[in-house]
Image 1 (cartoon, one colour):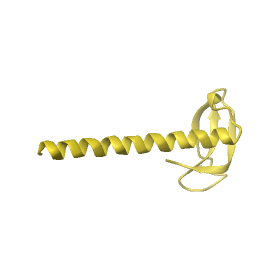
Image 2 (image 1 turned 90 degrees about the horizontal axis):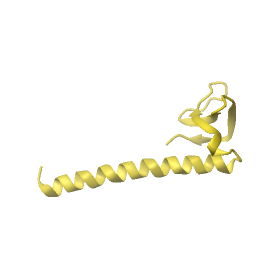
Image 3 (image 1 turned 30 degrees about the vertical axis):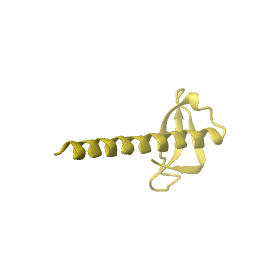
Length: 76
């Protein structure tokens, strides 16, 4: 690989990572916009009784409780 190709590959990898991180920040902002205190959230989840593919439809809080997200949020 030439130095230019290595540089291009490096830039593309960084842009991919940046896009992923921005999508995650958008997800957190959307949860917060639903009135959920994001400092209490441990993980995002999917409960099959509220089915939709490729989305998060709930969050599990650090205390173990689960809050349904309405509307569901697209998984990054």
